[in-house]
Amino acid sequence: MDSIDIANEHAERMLELNLKKVLNKALLPAAHACDTCGVEIPEERRKAVPGVQLCVDCKSIEEQRSKKR
Image (cartoon, rainbow, N blue to C red; front, side, top):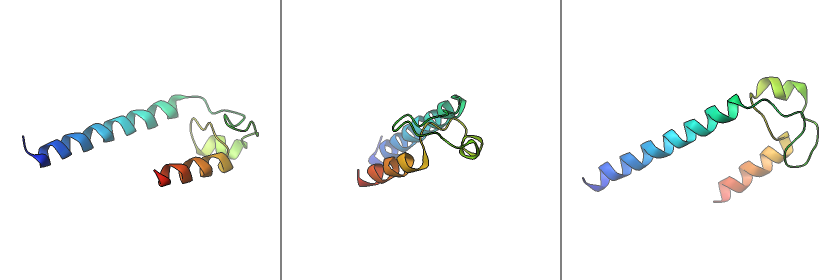
């Protein structure tokens, strides 16, 4: 097995993990209040984002933090 095979297997595992994470999140009922700050999540957001757990502001902060990694 060469380095390309190893890289492909790693990429495949990461894709599977990310898909499972997204699918599991979608199965959760949408929260009425943000898990982080407690602010009410508007009904429009709950309908648009299945399984939403964060308000727009907290989600933006989470995404900014993940970009810095």
